[in-house]
Amino acid sequence: MGGIAIATAGAVDREAASWVESCLATALGIDTERLDPLPDPSYAYDEGRGQYSSTLVLHDALARRPAHAARLLVITEHDIFIPMLSFVYGQAQLDGPVAVLSLARLRQEFYGLPPNRPLFLVRARKEALHEIGHTFGLTHCNDPGCAMALSTNIEQLDAKGSDYCSGCATLLRDAARVACDGAELAVRSGGIR
Image (tube, rainbow, N blue to C red; front, side, top):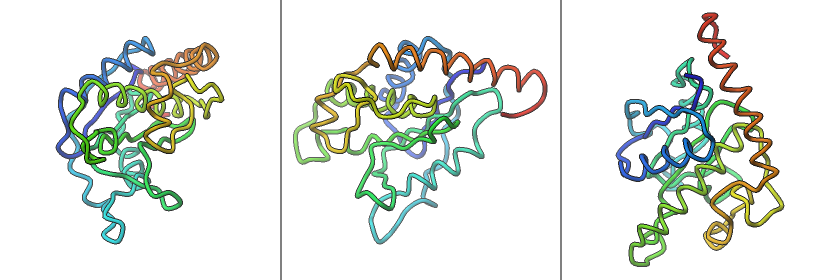
């Protein structure tokens, strides 16, 4: 296959996970595959913060990525963090095989507001494209309309676009082609990249 594998960790909104999978397949033009759900990442819970360590989730994802998949995106409903920030919407290994996306702060309900399903799904698309973009080597983009623009708060997330700018799209297409071909070659030769 050599595409993007998607797995949920813990109880996750199935429609949102399907939406993310569809968005990635359409935007990147490569195969996606839904894996069996992963267990709840209770191992990553930090009692002092009341959040889950995205770094620990990424570490676990590395061990679970199928050899035939160029990338693995783990989707969770849990609020995640890295030590230097109070929260992250997601985290990825830059030019690496795994990423994690949290749906927690993408929901209006997190901020005490009424649910807004269409807005939630647009936010999920933006962040899924953003994190997968990092796995293919894309860094933060200076174009505020690009999905790769930095978002450190919900206002920035809502202001950025839900697609890649032309420059990031070109870089991503080339990187995805190489990575996906490499995963296929690794499977055929019996190795793991």
